[in-house]
Each structure stands twice: as structure tokens, then as C-alpha cells.
Amino acid sequence: MAVIYRTYQDNRDGSITQGQWFGRAVHTNTIDLEAIGEEIQENVSVKYSDVMGVLIELINVMNRHLNASEVVKLNGFGSFKIGLKTKGALREEDFTAVKNIVGARVNFLPYYTVDGASGKHNTRFLSNVSVKNIKDLLPKEDDNNTPNP
Image (spheres, rainbow, N blue to C red):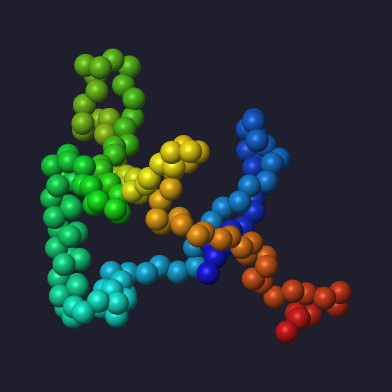
């Protein structure tokens, strides 16, 4: 399997990269908790209901700790923490939660190791990644505008 991407051009006025082309990942599917539970059950000697119980409780425990302003670190997986979206205030004494905090999000930092020789960060989520342009997956058209089989 490969990570699929499509190209796009930066057309923003005044951008220092205006006119340049970039790649952006294309997401082809969403896998939900139940499907993850099914897949895990196929690979371990634990029943689906047990897997789902653990996964659901993991979400509940993470929620509780994140909402207590704690970082949740899952060794070998990564760390989760709360981030805030705020509007600026001209003076510190004018900043209030009600006026200036406009949203919250979960930030995820995947577990990684650092290669001593190169200093490169390696994460198991990105090991053996290959990429493919979405154009290569679409049917080709010949000169008569008819799709090739």
C-alpha cells in the first residue's frame, strides 16, 4: 500500500511560494474504533468485547487526564496534550478565558527515536512509507477521450 497524494499550486497573493507546486495527502477511508477492535481481535487471543472494553476505557481515561491539563504518554505510541486557540489581547490584564479562549484541540506527537548518526527522527507510524500520485490511480484516457481498460 502507498500514501496517495495530489499536487496543488500555491495561488495565494503575496505568498513567497506563490506559483510553486506542492503535494498533499489524499485520505481514502476512515477506520473507526469498532473496525480497529475487529482487526486487533484477529491478531491476538482476546475476544472482540474485551478489546473494545479496553479501547473504550482508554478513551475515557485519556479524556479525564487531558481535561486535567496532563500530557498522556503512551510508550511506543506517542503523547497527547490539549492545545488552545486564543484571540490576542492588547494587555495581559485584558486577557480572559471567556473573551480570548475560542477553542481547544488535541495535539499528538508520535513516539520517535533519533538516529545517532544522522540525527533523523524515526517513528514506527512512518516506517516503510511509499507514496503514489493519485493521477497514477485514475483511469488513463487515450487520444479519443475514452478510458483505457
